[in-house]
Image (cartoon, rainbow, N blue to C red; front, top):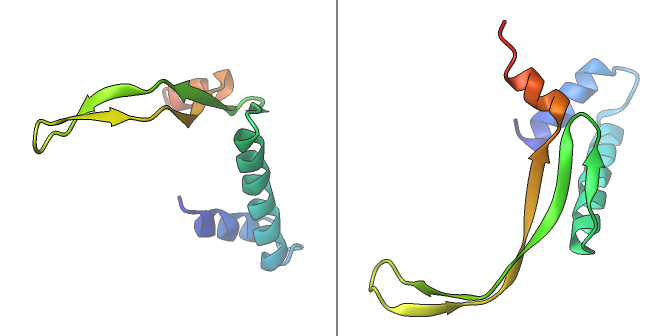
Length: 94
């Protein structure tokens, strides 16, 4: 599902809301999650999961094309851990 499909589905489920308002709400939620992660904070959505940031140390890597060793800088990456309810819903047998 893409962001525009999510906006469309929420708009259909809530006909009393204008689509532009739903678009603003969804964008605001995503922006707030991204801002929190950029500041090193953890974002937890109960029952869905938690977003956090993990630090990767610098290391020596290898260029797969040439076999040459290259230095890979340290970096921060986003990490998502599913919540219990989401895991149960994904693994439910229907």
